[in-house]
Image (tube, rainbow, N blue to C red; front, side, top):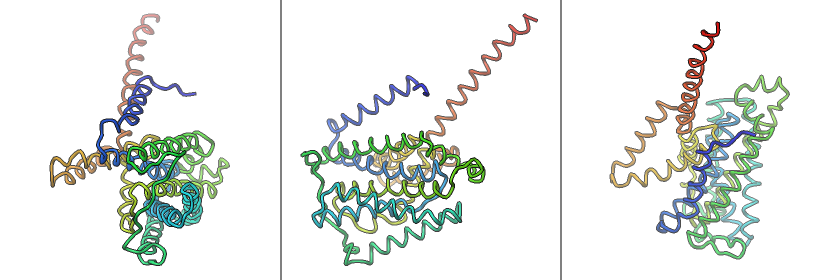
Length: 331
Protein backbone atom coordinates (compact mmCIF):
# COMPACT_ATOMS: atom_id res chain seq x y z
CA UNK A 1 0.00 0.00 0.00
CA UNK A 2 1.24 3.46 -0.89
CA UNK A 3 2.31 5.44 2.16
CA UNK A 4 0.51 8.73 2.78
CA UNK A 5 2.85 11.72 3.00
CA UNK A 6 2.64 13.41 6.45
CA UNK A 7 2.05 16.85 4.88
CA UNK A 8 -0.82 15.44 2.80
CA UNK A 9 -2.32 13.89 5.93
CA UNK A 10 -2.03 17.15 7.87
CA UNK A 11 -3.54 19.08 4.96
CA UNK A 12 -6.44 16.63 4.79
CA UNK A 13 -7.15 17.04 8.50
CA UNK A 14 -7.10 20.85 8.19
CA UNK A 15 -9.48 20.79 5.20
CA UNK A 16 -11.84 18.38 6.97
CA UNK A 17 -11.84 20.54 10.10
CA UNK A 18 -12.60 23.62 8.02
CA UNK A 19 -15.47 21.99 6.14
CA UNK A 20 -17.04 20.67 9.34
CA UNK A 21 -16.71 23.95 11.23
CA UNK A 22 -17.45 26.36 8.34
CA UNK A 23 -21.14 26.95 9.27
CA UNK A 24 -20.01 28.30 12.65
CA UNK A 25 -18.39 31.40 11.14
CA UNK A 26 -20.08 31.80 7.74
CA UNK A 27 -23.32 33.58 6.95
CA UNK A 28 -26.25 31.85 5.27
CA UNK A 29 -25.08 32.72 1.73
CA UNK A 30 -21.59 31.41 2.42
CA UNK A 31 -23.03 28.12 3.68
CA UNK A 32 -25.21 27.93 0.57
CA UNK A 33 -22.13 28.38 -1.65
CA UNK A 34 -20.31 25.57 0.16
CA UNK A 35 -23.34 23.31 -0.28
CA UNK A 36 -23.39 24.22 -3.98
CA UNK A 37 -19.66 23.42 -4.15
CA UNK A 38 -20.29 19.96 -2.65
CA UNK A 39 -23.10 19.22 -5.11
CA UNK A 40 -21.18 20.53 -8.13
CA UNK A 41 -18.08 18.56 -7.17
CA UNK A 42 -20.07 15.31 -7.37
CA UNK A 43 -20.95 16.12 -11.00
CA UNK A 44 -17.31 17.07 -11.71
CA UNK A 45 -16.14 13.77 -10.16
CA UNK A 46 -18.23 11.93 -12.72
CA UNK A 47 -16.86 13.99 -15.62
CA UNK A 48 -13.32 13.46 -14.34
CA UNK A 49 -13.92 9.70 -14.48
CA UNK A 50 -15.20 9.92 -18.07
CA UNK A 51 -12.62 12.43 -19.32
CA UNK A 52 -9.64 12.30 -16.97
CA UNK A 53 -9.43 8.53 -16.49
CA UNK A 54 -11.19 7.00 -19.50
CA UNK A 55 -10.23 9.75 -21.97
CA UNK A 56 -13.75 10.21 -23.39
CA UNK A 57 -14.80 13.82 -24.07
CA UNK A 58 -18.32 14.74 -22.96
CA UNK A 59 -20.13 18.05 -23.29
CA UNK A 60 -23.35 16.64 -21.86
CA UNK A 61 -22.53 16.50 -18.15
CA UNK A 62 -24.62 19.59 -17.38
CA UNK A 63 -27.55 18.08 -19.28
CA UNK A 64 -27.36 14.97 -17.09
CA UNK A 65 -27.38 17.17 -13.99
CA UNK A 66 -30.54 18.78 -15.37
CA UNK A 67 -32.08 15.38 -16.09
CA UNK A 68 -31.44 14.27 -12.52
CA UNK A 69 -32.79 17.56 -11.14
CA UNK A 70 -36.01 17.39 -13.17
CA UNK A 71 -36.53 13.72 -12.33
CA UNK A 72 -36.24 14.43 -8.62
CA UNK A 73 -38.38 17.58 -8.77
CA UNK A 74 -41.18 15.87 -10.69
CA UNK A 75 -41.19 12.72 -8.58
CA UNK A 76 -41.10 14.46 -5.22
CA UNK A 77 -43.75 16.90 -6.44
CA UNK A 78 -45.94 13.87 -7.17
CA UNK A 79 -45.49 12.61 -3.61
CA UNK A 80 -42.69 10.08 -4.18
CA UNK A 81 -40.23 9.87 -1.23
CA UNK A 82 -37.05 11.82 -1.86
CA UNK A 83 -34.59 8.94 -1.69
CA UNK A 84 -36.67 6.91 -4.16
CA UNK A 85 -36.47 9.88 -6.55
CA UNK A 86 -32.76 10.21 -5.76
CA UNK A 87 -32.09 6.60 -6.80
CA UNK A 88 -34.35 6.94 -9.85
CA UNK A 89 -32.33 9.96 -11.02
CA UNK A 90 -29.10 7.96 -10.84
CA UNK A 91 -30.56 4.89 -12.56
CA UNK A 92 -32.12 6.94 -15.37
CA UNK A 93 -28.95 8.91 -16.10
CA UNK A 94 -26.88 5.70 -15.90
CA UNK A 95 -29.08 4.07 -18.54
CA UNK A 96 -29.07 7.09 -20.87
CA UNK A 97 -25.31 7.56 -20.34
CA UNK A 98 -24.79 3.93 -21.36
CA UNK A 99 -26.70 4.58 -24.58
CA UNK A 100 -24.76 7.80 -25.20
CA UNK A 101 -21.56 5.81 -24.90
CA UNK A 102 -22.27 3.87 -28.09
CA UNK A 103 -21.13 6.71 -30.40
CA UNK A 104 -17.84 6.70 -28.47
CA UNK A 105 -17.21 3.21 -29.86
CA UNK A 106 -17.04 4.67 -33.37
CA UNK A 107 -15.93 8.31 -33.02
CA UNK A 108 -13.26 9.92 -30.85
CA UNK A 109 -11.92 13.29 -29.74
CA UNK A 110 -13.72 16.33 -31.21
CA UNK A 111 -16.16 14.15 -33.17
CA UNK A 112 -17.34 12.63 -29.89
CA UNK A 113 -17.60 16.11 -28.40
CA UNK A 114 -20.01 17.06 -31.20
CA UNK A 115 -22.15 14.00 -30.48
CA UNK A 116 -22.46 14.86 -26.78
CA UNK A 117 -23.05 18.51 -27.73
CA UNK A 118 -25.99 17.44 -29.88
CA UNK A 119 -27.42 15.38 -27.02
CA UNK A 120 -27.05 18.30 -24.61
CA UNK A 121 -28.88 20.59 -27.04
CA UNK A 122 -31.64 18.03 -27.56
CA UNK A 123 -32.23 17.60 -23.85
CA UNK A 124 -32.29 21.38 -23.33
CA UNK A 125 -34.93 21.75 -26.04
CA UNK A 126 -37.03 19.03 -24.44
CA UNK A 127 -36.83 20.75 -21.05
CA UNK A 128 -37.81 24.09 -22.56
CA UNK A 129 -40.53 23.03 -25.00
CA UNK A 130 -42.33 20.13 -23.28
CA UNK A 131 -44.36 22.34 -20.95
CA UNK A 132 -46.81 19.57 -20.08
CA UNK A 133 -43.95 17.82 -18.27
CA UNK A 134 -41.32 20.40 -17.30
CA UNK A 135 -43.43 23.60 -17.18
CA UNK A 136 -41.13 24.99 -19.86
CA UNK A 137 -39.46 28.34 -19.32
CA UNK A 138 -41.45 28.89 -16.13
CA UNK A 139 -39.57 26.08 -14.42
CA UNK A 140 -40.47 24.15 -11.30
CA UNK A 141 -40.45 25.91 -7.94
CA UNK A 142 -41.14 25.09 -4.30
CA UNK A 143 -39.05 21.92 -4.47
CA UNK A 144 -39.07 20.41 -1.00
CA UNK A 145 -35.86 19.65 0.81
CA UNK A 146 -35.65 16.12 2.23
CA UNK A 147 -35.80 14.90 5.81
CA UNK A 148 -32.79 12.70 6.56
CA UNK A 149 -33.01 10.32 9.52
CA UNK A 150 -35.70 12.50 11.02
CA UNK A 151 -33.65 15.70 10.58
CA UNK A 152 -35.08 18.42 8.34
CA UNK A 153 -32.69 20.02 5.83
CA UNK A 154 -34.78 23.14 5.24
CA UNK A 155 -32.02 25.36 6.63
CA UNK A 156 -28.84 25.85 4.64
CA UNK A 157 -26.68 24.50 7.46
CA UNK A 158 -28.50 21.18 7.65
CA UNK A 159 -28.55 20.80 3.88
CA UNK A 160 -24.85 21.64 3.70
CA UNK A 161 -23.97 18.79 6.04
CA UNK A 162 -26.24 16.47 4.05
CA UNK A 163 -24.58 17.48 0.76
CA UNK A 164 -21.13 17.18 2.34
CA UNK A 165 -21.88 13.66 3.55
CA UNK A 166 -23.06 12.71 0.06
CA UNK A 167 -19.87 14.16 -1.41
CA UNK A 168 -17.79 12.03 0.96
CA UNK A 169 -19.78 8.93 -0.05
CA UNK A 170 -19.37 9.54 -3.78
CA UNK A 171 -15.70 10.47 -3.37
CA UNK A 172 -15.14 7.14 -1.59
CA UNK A 173 -16.92 5.28 -4.41
CA UNK A 174 -14.73 7.07 -6.95
CA UNK A 175 -11.57 6.38 -4.89
CA UNK A 176 -12.43 2.67 -4.66
CA UNK A 177 -13.27 2.49 -8.34
CA UNK A 178 -10.05 4.00 -9.69
CA UNK A 179 -8.00 1.64 -7.51
CA UNK A 180 -9.95 -1.40 -8.66
CA UNK A 181 -9.40 -3.31 -11.92
CA UNK A 182 -12.04 -1.01 -13.41
CA UNK A 183 -9.87 2.04 -12.79
CA UNK A 184 -6.80 0.40 -14.32
CA UNK A 185 -8.89 -0.57 -17.36
CA UNK A 186 -10.15 3.02 -17.71
CA UNK A 187 -6.59 4.36 -17.63
CA UNK A 188 -5.44 1.77 -20.18
CA UNK A 189 -8.37 2.81 -22.38
CA UNK A 190 -7.30 6.46 -22.13
CA UNK A 191 -3.64 5.83 -22.92
CA UNK A 192 -4.01 3.46 -25.88
CA UNK A 193 -7.27 1.66 -26.75
CA UNK A 194 -5.56 -0.71 -29.20
CA UNK A 195 -2.94 -1.75 -26.67
CA UNK A 196 -5.62 -2.11 -24.01
CA UNK A 197 -7.60 -4.42 -26.29
CA UNK A 198 -4.47 -6.49 -27.00
CA UNK A 199 -4.04 -6.95 -23.23
CA UNK A 200 -7.55 -8.31 -22.87
CA UNK A 201 -9.44 -5.17 -21.84
CA UNK A 202 -13.00 -5.18 -23.15
CA UNK A 203 -12.87 -1.75 -24.80
CA UNK A 204 -16.55 -1.76 -25.70
CA UNK A 205 -17.77 -2.51 -22.19
CA UNK A 206 -15.44 -0.13 -20.37
CA UNK A 207 -16.17 2.73 -22.77
CA UNK A 208 -19.88 2.34 -22.09
CA UNK A 209 -19.24 2.04 -18.34
CA UNK A 210 -17.17 5.24 -18.32
CA UNK A 211 -20.05 7.20 -19.83
CA UNK A 212 -22.72 5.51 -17.74
CA UNK A 213 -21.01 5.93 -14.36
CA UNK A 214 -19.95 9.50 -15.09
CA UNK A 215 -23.51 10.34 -16.15
CA UNK A 216 -24.95 8.69 -13.03
CA UNK A 217 -22.75 10.90 -10.84
CA UNK A 218 -24.23 13.90 -12.65
CA UNK A 219 -27.75 12.56 -12.14
CA UNK A 220 -27.18 12.15 -8.41
CA UNK A 221 -25.73 15.67 -8.30
CA UNK A 222 -28.88 16.94 -10.01
CA UNK A 223 -31.01 15.14 -7.42
CA UNK A 224 -29.18 17.19 -4.78
CA UNK A 225 -29.16 20.41 -6.79
CA UNK A 226 -32.94 20.59 -7.17
CA UNK A 227 -33.79 20.72 -3.43
CA UNK A 228 -30.78 22.93 -2.74
CA UNK A 229 -31.87 25.76 -5.06
CA UNK A 230 -35.59 24.83 -4.80
CA UNK A 231 -36.23 26.21 -8.30
CA UNK A 232 -35.05 24.78 -11.60
CA UNK A 233 -35.56 25.94 -15.18
CA UNK A 234 -34.04 24.90 -18.54
CA UNK A 235 -31.51 27.73 -18.86
CA UNK A 236 -29.69 26.48 -15.77
CA UNK A 237 -28.66 23.32 -17.65
CA UNK A 238 -27.79 24.55 -21.12
CA UNK A 239 -24.40 24.08 -22.76
CA UNK A 240 -22.67 26.76 -20.68
CA UNK A 241 -23.19 24.64 -17.55
CA UNK A 242 -21.54 21.63 -19.20
CA UNK A 243 -18.64 23.87 -20.22
CA UNK A 244 -18.33 25.09 -16.63
CA UNK A 245 -18.08 21.50 -15.39
CA UNK A 246 -15.48 20.76 -18.06
CA UNK A 247 -13.53 23.85 -16.98
CA UNK A 248 -13.61 22.69 -13.35
CA UNK A 249 -12.06 19.35 -14.29
CA UNK A 250 -9.39 20.93 -16.50
CA UNK A 251 -8.47 23.72 -14.08
CA UNK A 252 -8.27 21.36 -11.12
CA UNK A 253 -6.41 18.72 -13.09
CA UNK A 254 -7.99 16.04 -15.29
CA UNK A 255 -7.00 12.56 -14.17
CA UNK A 256 -6.17 13.66 -10.61
CA UNK A 257 -8.47 12.43 -7.86
CA UNK A 258 -8.59 15.82 -6.13
CA UNK A 259 -8.83 17.76 -9.39
CA UNK A 260 -12.64 18.23 -9.34
CA UNK A 261 -12.52 19.41 -5.72
CA UNK A 262 -9.97 22.08 -6.54
CA UNK A 263 -11.57 23.03 -9.86
CA UNK A 264 -15.05 23.46 -8.37
CA UNK A 265 -13.59 25.50 -5.52
CA UNK A 266 -11.85 27.85 -7.95
CA UNK A 267 -14.80 28.14 -10.33
CA UNK A 268 -17.46 28.79 -7.67
CA UNK A 269 -15.62 30.68 -4.95
CA UNK A 270 -12.90 32.65 -6.75
CA UNK A 271 -15.40 34.92 -8.58
CA UNK A 272 -17.08 35.60 -5.22
CA UNK A 273 -13.77 36.52 -3.60
CA UNK A 274 -13.02 38.87 -6.51
CA UNK A 275 -16.29 40.80 -6.26
CA UNK A 276 -14.52 43.58 -4.35
CA UNK A 277 -13.15 44.58 -7.79
CA UNK A 278 -16.78 45.32 -8.77
CA UNK A 279 -17.25 45.08 -12.55
CA UNK A 280 -13.75 43.68 -13.18
CA UNK A 281 -14.05 40.43 -11.25
CA UNK A 282 -15.07 38.31 -14.25
CA UNK A 283 -12.29 39.83 -16.37
CA UNK A 284 -9.68 39.04 -13.69
CA UNK A 285 -11.07 35.54 -13.19
CA UNK A 286 -11.02 34.81 -16.93
CA UNK A 287 -7.45 36.12 -17.25
CA UNK A 288 -6.30 33.89 -14.40
CA UNK A 289 -7.90 30.80 -15.94
CA UNK A 290 -6.47 31.53 -19.41
CA UNK A 291 -3.00 32.04 -17.92
CA UNK A 292 -3.23 28.78 -16.00
CA UNK A 293 -4.34 26.80 -19.06
CA UNK A 294 -1.64 28.38 -21.22
CA UNK A 295 1.28 27.65 -18.91
CA UNK A 296 0.02 24.48 -17.21
CA UNK A 297 -2.64 22.62 -19.20
CA UNK A 298 -2.60 19.84 -16.58
CA UNK A 299 -4.26 22.19 -14.07
CA UNK A 300 -3.48 23.30 -10.53
CA UNK A 301 -2.64 19.82 -9.33
CA UNK A 302 -0.46 19.39 -12.39
CA UNK A 303 1.64 22.31 -11.12
CA UNK A 304 1.93 20.62 -7.73
CA UNK A 305 2.94 17.37 -9.42
CA UNK A 306 5.60 19.12 -11.51
CA UNK A 307 7.07 20.76 -8.39
CA UNK A 308 7.11 17.39 -6.60
CA UNK A 309 8.80 15.65 -9.54
CA UNK A 310 11.38 18.45 -9.78
CA UNK A 311 12.22 18.04 -6.08
CA UNK A 312 12.59 14.28 -6.48
CA UNK A 313 14.79 14.78 -9.53
CA UNK A 314 17.04 17.27 -7.68
CA UNK A 315 17.28 14.94 -4.69
CA UNK A 316 18.24 12.03 -6.95
CA UNK A 317 20.85 14.16 -8.74
CA UNK A 318 22.33 15.26 -5.39
CA UNK A 319 22.48 11.65 -4.22
CA UNK A 320 24.31 10.58 -7.39
CA UNK A 321 26.72 13.51 -7.04
CA UNK A 322 27.44 12.54 -3.43
CA UNK A 323 28.16 8.94 -4.40
CA UNK A 324 30.47 9.87 -7.29
CA UNK A 325 33.55 10.94 -5.20
CA UNK A 326 33.35 7.87 -3.01
CA UNK A 327 33.23 5.63 -6.07
CA UNK A 328 36.27 7.46 -7.52
CA UNK A 329 38.30 7.21 -4.30
CA UNK A 330 37.61 3.47 -3.95
CA UNK A 331 39.11 2.93 -7.37
